Length: 242
Image (cartoon, rainbow, N blue to C red; front, side):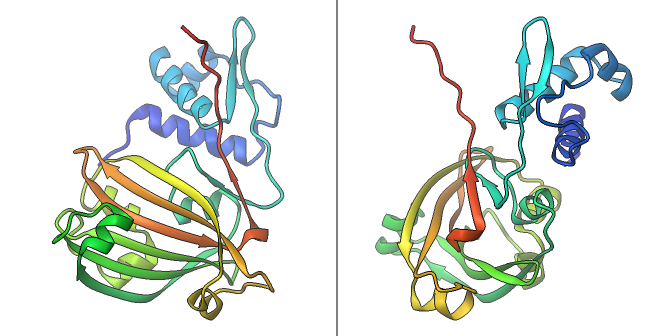
């Protein structure tokens, strides 16, 4: 599915901010300059800037312009508020990613799975375990369940490349919403087997339910992260009381 113009501009500006072409507290070029830069309308620029603001990269200052508020962090950072693939997160952190599939099977959701994931009893789902590497270190253990009826044709090759790239660019799916929960949990035997824990006996765990544009929950994921290597961040805005 081709990207909209504003999404392409958003991506380019985001990369420039992350690459420090536009540094913390710098102002982006004016709207008029960006209209010429990208050969687009004022509304297109405003939609791209609005997305950057929602992600915590910039802040619009009335009468002054759009200021960069993004600051790189020392640890690898993963967003809570946005929906970002592992490959996209690794690229943003200037790390080399790789993935190893350690289990890939099909199961039928039972009551226990329903209570944990939200998949309706009787649903056919893929059950996947993957080890995620950054610069050669095994740092994340992912457990993925995907609804087979909505995500057909999965292969090991897809799982070791990018599920989201396959969903969006091959199946044409629009990924819209992800509900997430973050906990700290004791490391399990399977964590100890696959991850470079470096002496840690607990992990930062992100559990998520992800929905497409039809309102169907197609994925449940539990990502288990070594705690010293990651920083999870979000951006919040205070809304005025009515």
